[in-house]
Image 1 (cartoon, rainbow, N blue to C red):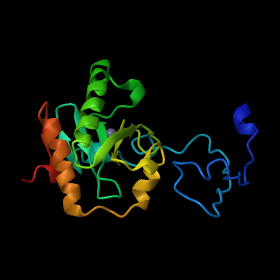
Image 2 (tube, protein in one colour; image 1 turned 30 degrees about the vertical axis):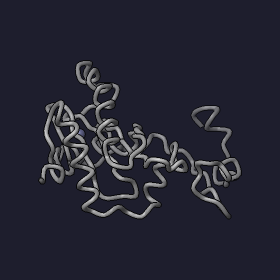
Image 3 (tube, protein in one colour; image 1 turned 90 degrees about the vertical axis):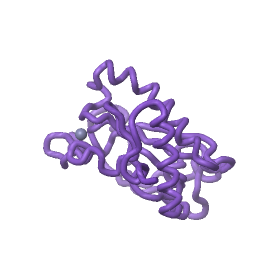
Length: 199
Ligand SMILES: [Zn+2]
């Protein structure tokens, strides 16, 4: 095995769910079972956009499902889900975080601030969560999730689970929320795209 961390784990077994049960942010109760712990896969299978992996969806169709874009960045929103909106910030060109050019990296902080602020302009949104995982696609991307005002169970990382659990918002409301976000961003740079460009 590759590290002390890897070698001490109980592969094939179910670790207890107890540490999470009853926590204020954990969305399940009752008889919760953790899935058996899988063996590591090393080397890891290629991600989309890596040699041997699937084509990079952003490079194949850059503006597909984009709701806003400027010369450097695109913001995508895929479909109605349980939250007011979930969006994805991606550079137009294919980079990873570690090879993002310095000039583009310098605009990432302002973009995070702008997208977070734009999402918060949607009625009923209390906070914008954002995170970078990067396990599915090599093309650098940051997720933004709208946390509804006052919904204290949705604080923290489990908001991604709540996004799947809550009833899907209506398509019209999703499009209106996308327009709110895109128009806010367009006040500084770029323009609304796709569903956000309709009047
Ligand atoms: Zn790409």
